[in-house]
Image (cartoon, rainbow, N blue to C red; front, top):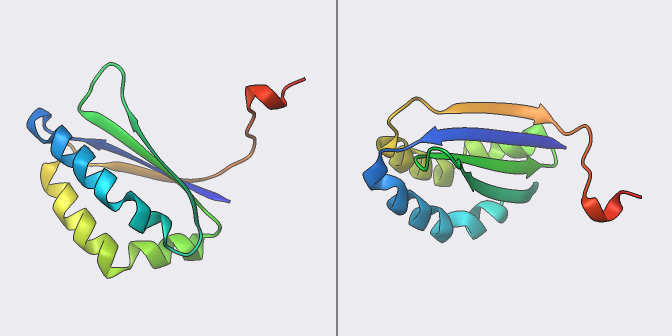
Length: 103
């Protein structure tokens, strides 16, 4: 499983717009082949910073999504709201624990 983490910093007057747009498109992202999980986080100390975590079955699935017309349109609109260059990482998930599974 591949995990894609993206850190985005927005201008303060655009965070509500970003969140509304994200909520409008999140199901469309999940419809892409291989997308198994999508999460949005907001930094506790700086409310202009957001992170997306998306879980993909394979790197090929992520590339298919990133090369889609849908992604190009969404990213083209979103990047106009940034105040800093976004940062992104593709990582392999090694371990995941949940409290209910710890004995």
